[in-house]
Length: 481
Image (cartoon, rainbow, N blue to C red; front, top):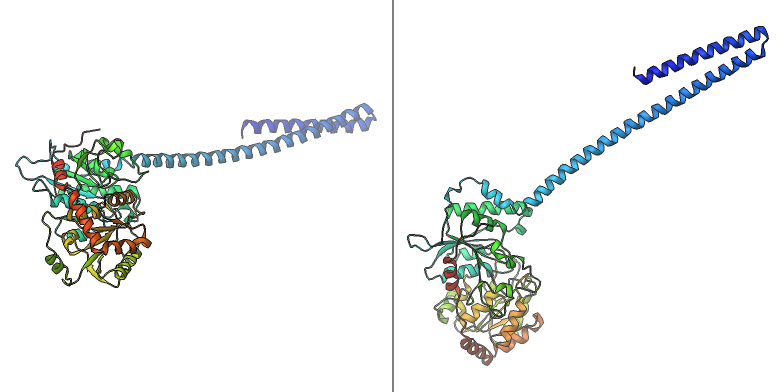
């Protein structure tokens, strides 16, 4: 029994005594017929009743207050527990958010077997053998990234060797041509979150360099993944950003403004529509080279190209290749119909690895060839998107082209490139699918195609792939930051 209970017991006992005494006084007053004693006894009883009522009221209030305090205590405990859980959740969430950009470095630093990493002052091995390069590409709307890396390997003139790790689903097509290529799914191609994908990509890069040691890493894409920067820094390897220019207005340029925080150097092949004098100022510090393409140094004769493709040498052909940002194949169908209606040329459609198998066309269809530019002599002209590779392959081989610029590519400004081609009379541009029949009919007229060929010969666009290779082998490792 606590102190409050003792007090209540004493008060009740005192009240009981007052009541008994008051009752005795009343009884005595009645026996003696004394009004004063009766009054005193009644007052005593009233006081006793009042005390009892007050005690009962206080007791009830005390019980209510106790219940209320107990309930408040329970609520406070629940709130405290909830806050503690929320605090723990926020703490872990903040740690996760803070680790998103650091996760690659942490994975790399804690991965066993890093003894194979060795400091290098330059990628050229001491024994004079060509340095080995790991080319890494993102997964654009077409084959531009992977084809550009293959072009550097093809035209390196013995300056380097290497292999390609790509996020492009066209990897198998390039590998079939004899290039050393491995596919790794992009984050968009997986059901995993970005944080998980970065961990997996970092581990893949470490595994790749462990199994196939390299002297430099070259990335071709729009955004340099943090995994690449982290692995290159830990491995003390140069990381070169092979960056195609002519980005759309509004493209995120934050990595360009502080590119030294991400890569060793930036190499930018020129574009028919952009060079160091016309590019945005923040790009002008890059190493600039002539345009790069897979076009062979020695063209294949028409008869050999026709025979290799299994085509009738008595017919004339126009290549139609509108994958890579030109929709689901409807543009191809419209162009095939336009060529047939306006000329005697046979449209030849390439089964693109980037289009669904359901896409079929009532014309000659050939399997995807890589590099298709080797057979450029087979075509009177081509109908393609206005992507970097399509345009510059034609300029390097002297092939007339009709270009349908894609409006769906995320960063490549195909519209601006197509306008530059048209202004220089190096090809024709179709203003959408509805205008394609007009453009192919104009190009199919022999005189127009010859005019374009003459303009290309006069322009004499140089091949820059060997210059890119030279820039790679002279790069230095990443500096700590």
